[in-house]
Image (cartoon, rainbow, N blue to C red; front, side):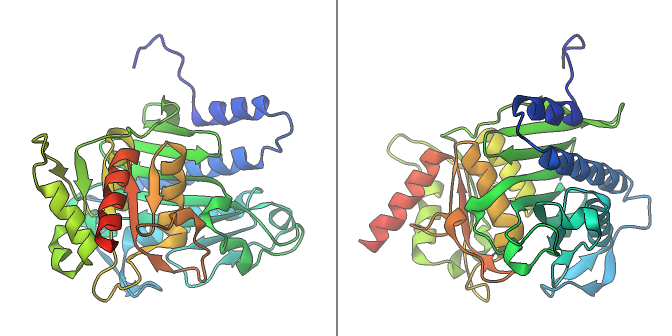
Length: 339
């Protein structure tokens, strides 16, 4: 970064955005800053996990029946605590908790937003020092202001999101968030402890040569998905070769796709006949971000993912997401199979 270039922090950026919209209340801006604060606390523990007693299993399972890591617990506590002490959030639903949490103080009950979050995505990567992340989603409540939030506030289709984002803890720590206007990326500057605008107005490249899927389950996928994988593995008439990538962390997969383009596929298979990833905590926020950056997100060959109406907090769905042109290829393969 040019040392003479004006560095805009997350706080400065959200305040500037607030000034551009005089009718705004500032609640969303404040909420994003609170999420950024919690992310910095989690980042500190992630960076010293190898020398602190925070690696390994916590000795319990979450509502999904999955083993909980110590960092999972820590991140969950930090984000919920930050949102609860905020005056901009009336309740939160977390992938780690069976039910949503309504905040009952008078300030919170007057707030107009609820937050859904996956506090630490990619937990299986923690002990091997591979990128992990946090995913969040913001909705305007449906229940009356002044009362505790209700389940209906959290079970809204993704099209109703006000904002969504993720934090990736990798070689650098980045916070990327989307509103209905744009997608912005901020990198944490450890020298000042602030997220600084580094990737303004992010756009997903419409074309790429990267595809991402867990090929280990190839023979368990439905035939259209296998056809798509076969297409990307084979040279086409232009002698084009696609590159395969798979990290095992949704945040890392989507971040790479957003920056470099490509397609990420997590189909239904085997015992996950309805899909593996969570609609409310993972797929909806990532689909919102991708669409606002010019990409496409589908639950299957015809269904736009953001139009799905959740029926429960921990509902799972398949997801196919990425660059517009690559998603067009995938949809054509699915259509040809059906015909």
